[in-house]
Image 1 (cartoon, rainbow, N blue to C red):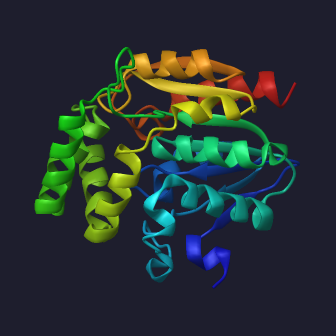
Image 2 (cartoon, rainbow, N blue to C red):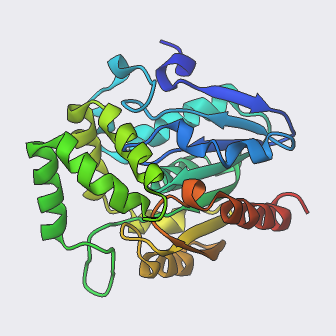
Length: 268
């Protein structure tokens, strides 16, 4: 099985460096359609679907491999080896920002920078750490998914998207969630929401942009502050936006922040 078919890898643009876009839980690469084309004149742009999502090869889903986020990070390194041109700027949304941290920690020489959209290294509150959820909250979320994945998706996706004045975006995210195989989605949810990669932040040496929304139910501001304090070379940028998907709900602001970061870090 080729990496291209396994992850439905798509390439566009050209340039001396590569921007690799990794989507979040329940999503697929179409979520980058308002951001990725902005960079195709200056970079090689690579988008893909995590195994088990979008148009990836569902037959490649290995429950043991993908029981932790490291399995997805290993896939990213294979995509980089096969499709990247020059140093890589890894753009990861939500859990894929954490997957990106694992990938850059494993092979820092391949990456010039990371851009993390709505990241969180741990979703569960722990002492002074505010992840946004209690363990009971997460257990209830997972139990609800187990009982009725499609119903859970219909309720949670619009809340995750935010921007209530643009309900079509919530509908789109709901549709994307519902296209996923429920058993794979539930397994991925456990790997995502029960993970704790706070100790891995210091292992990732690449310059990083932490791009957060001012009001995000999944990744509260405290998480961004925590990551900024612990990532060795990071910048925190807050977008005035309600929701967890600014690349869809606030693409212009997202692109401005990304461009400003790239001008400072890799294009100076």
